[in-house]
Image (cartoon, rainbow, N blue to C red; front, side, top):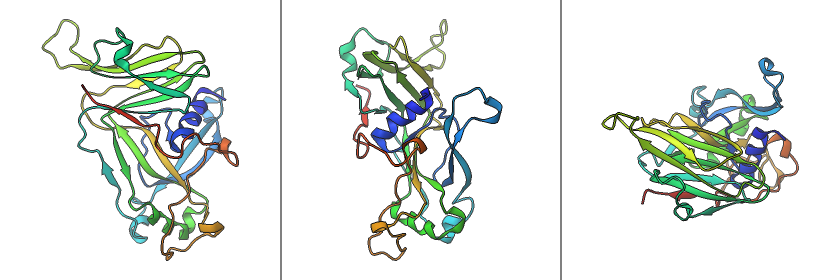
Length: 273
């Protein structure tokens, strides 16, 4: 299992959401398409990956309007400070302040303790959640032939700054923080945002944007339009209490998904103290 697949796998088991290996690739609620496994043709040397291939968007394609799917709702749009993080089941939160003197320049930081097997962490600054409410309204799309056997993005997390970390075995404790410091030699200049961490090994990637514009999508939820209905039936749009569409599963997990968490219980928040 390559690094990207391992990262996606670990966070999916905790959140039932898909973590993006490249959060700067645009993903929006309503995007629909399919999964494919393989390598981009221009990068035949790379390891095989799970790719969500977008084929359309139900809002731009006017499908949502025809089937009366509500417009997406944004939660936390006015949030201005704090970190939110998601961790794999084998990672435990620890008090970052107790790890002094690690990252003393950071007002925003979080600490993690990894098991001997390693683990995965996604940290976002000032994130927002975009979702479709009620989620059960998406069952109406089961009647759309164009979307048959496809998958659909039903929730997205967007942020201006993120840090993702895939820890190697025997990593131990790691602190990840976001600092805002003026450029060297220019104390009166606008502060530059930067992610810093105490890890000495593993795969770390980040983006820090001081503008506050939420251009990155590090995490999103995908549901399946393969017609799994209530009690094994496809289900009717007129059901008295229709259930949400089932979660889509990464291709390598199909038929065998031992999920570590039933929902977003692994989410923690840290605000400036």
